[in-house]
Figure 1: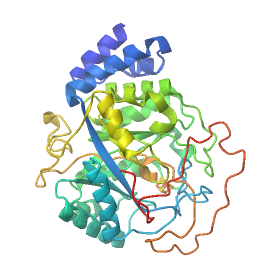
Figure 2: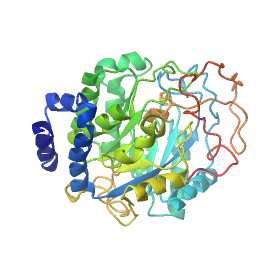
Figure 3: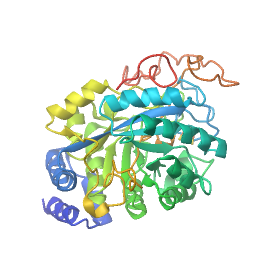
Length: 416
Ligand code: SF4
């Protein structure tokens, strides 16, 4: 296909495809899909070899957010039965982080629900970052705390944070349809503040919220212009109790096309397969490793991922290797960004985070429900038990979405 040859050549030269070329990737047929994956795989291998970076999410504060992001289980008015708890203490977060690192994670992502951190929140998170770094100085730490105010990025950097995640999530044109309590411009501003504060910017998207192909191309082109070091690609987990609970409109083939398009547009950036991979890619997950160079290990913020060992087995079976702490993530020409200097505490002014990917609710990973008191976490005033979802819930996709009930905020061992 001329299209794919052109896109490979452009990807190898780090040249921006045209919008028409990006749209054409999303419009390819199922018969062409393996050719699309092979072509984007050439670009992925050029810049990242066969390495897969593992990232580990820690939900520092879960649920009861005043914002109304419609994809998020932690949103205002959410009826999702997720774990709800307020800030983990530094020793609790450090214990969870250690499990992720022992499982192979190179980066831990500290995520908290909320519009944005207060200065007191920055103090708490700083203490946690310092505790994690004291235990393992090579681990990268990414914070995902919502909209930043002046000076907060600098304070996180001074505490040892390497990166900051804040996703654009969707196109500027449709942003108002998914969230009304803050704007697309607010999000862009926070990504810029993170970079100016010396943190490696991480910003991505959520696919599957009813957007058009043009919207997807818009948000990926906007990310290319914003130039984060890492781009988490989330696939909506339609969590019961959220407004988008019925948005089951992704197929494994569509997910692969979206990942390939993202790789062609952001060829030398850490593209991370984030929330929703188990739910939407299902048995096609290993194929996606040809497109992305980064995934989250184990569970998400409020929903369960596959077992951490299954992630490691999948990477090995597909012929890829887990990226070690001594390897740079990003290509040399992106020096200064995360990945290029990870492991170098003096210069790691940027890596790239995720999660929210699904990662923070800010990443777009919906939080699930559940309002039982959580052992080891401070009780949240006003947290009411939420009734179980109705019998018809998830009738079309039984068993695909499970609320996280282990790890951070519980007394059960994390999945790592
Ligand atoms: S995505 Fe973040 S800001 Fe939006 S509702 Fe969820 S936790 Fe709150």
